[in-house]
Image (cartoon, rainbow, N blue to C red; front, side, top):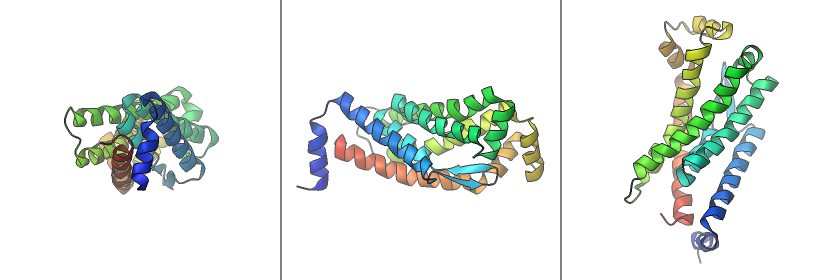
Length: 213
């Protein structure tokens, strides 16, 4: 019996609720392990190149919007911890001067990202067979939405802060839109590519082994 068949047999005996909780716990553990080992974030200038969207994308695709939001919450809490302890220069500045906005920025935006990624896959999935491209399309939404919500919140509520204005001057941005493009740049493309490839492949593989889709 192949490994996939063994895995399928093992999961088949579990209830849907137990299966969902087990997968969620596993993905939360992966998220925390990546963060603890420094595998999820790479400092790049004022921002961190983050790959912590990968477990969020997998959870949102396999388990739906609600579990996507749980994994987004996990991601957000690690980001908030980094802000509180000084591990992230930008969010640490925000936390010192605007703690309420920092909580919404680090945690709220990540919860929303996980929720929306799940909704995107649900919309793509529809009622028919799930084609493989839909897994990759939904997976790439996680980093794109993460950047959109995170940077969008900064531009809406924290753009006039001293540190952001220093970054605006340093990048030479003429407006908030150009500021986001110049600050995120290649970093955002790398995040999107990694999450699309790994998140889509893992989601499709687990879905086939566990859910027979």
